[in-house]
Image 1 (cartoon, rainbow, N blue to C red):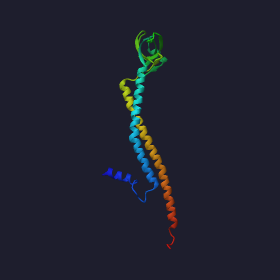
Image 2: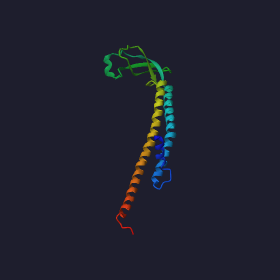
Image 3: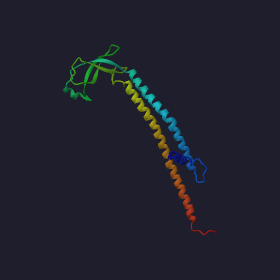
Image 4: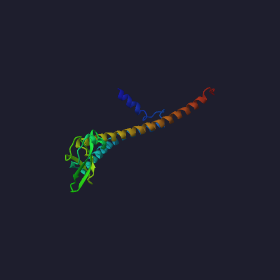
Length: 193
């Protein structure tokens, strides 16, 4: 029952009515366009956002590779001055790239590791240290989040546009109503002839 009432209220702008104004018809068309944008562009934006995020994660997985590195020196609590990341201590490691060149750099490792310990590092195509690529499950979660966020952004933009236009149309309706009241008010009190 409530849904039928809501639909009837929203469809009054489409029926012929002597009280219907141009602004009412314009608002009805804009509302129809907004619903079409939400119904069509929202899902498309979601799919494109999810696809872009999944493609980006796959590209990062393809560009990065792991290598086994050797810790250069012991890692102790006195090393805290060199920096910490999440309870881990930055330490210098060395590794050999697939092309045979030797490299070194700093990565966060667990406290108490001894020199010569082996750790896994991730490098990019230029053999610079980088973060590990996202796992397939994390990439899926990120893609789903980006898809939902893209769809939500389209819906929010469409709704904000509609309410912005509605504010302008309401101002025009109020101005027209005030003008009509002034015209009618100026005729009050006159004797009918």
